[in-house]
Length: 145
Ligand code: DQA
Image 1 (cartoon, rainbow, N blue to C red):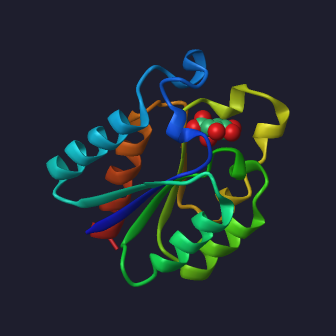
Image 2 (cartoon, protein in one colour):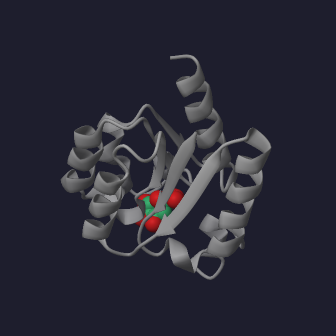
């Protein structure tokens, strides 16, 4: 089973960026955690981060026929991007939305998620563990289908 782990804008600055909200772990540490947990679960996970919306769309499109599932933290594009919603709908790859912080407890503009409508599940506020939970969820979903 192959999973694509997509992270959107400013998540490359994890550790530096608002540590009171996102914690002190870096993006590299997140990728190492994902690699370790993927190995434990016997799945393949490929991490990718970009600050650009169109690059996320490209990655989702390129995942068609290559990856069995997508874990995506679209970051700020969560709250603005119809293009990401349409891309996930277009490829129909089982997808889980992840947010490190608990967006439900934050500003009103963070209460909208366009991509959510195309996702099997949303995990928010579980920190880096949320990505691992998303992989576990997708693995179980694919095994039971
Ligand atoms: C985030 C929450 C978003 O509102 C924010 O724009 C981010 C990160 C999170 O992981 O908690 O960049 O997606």
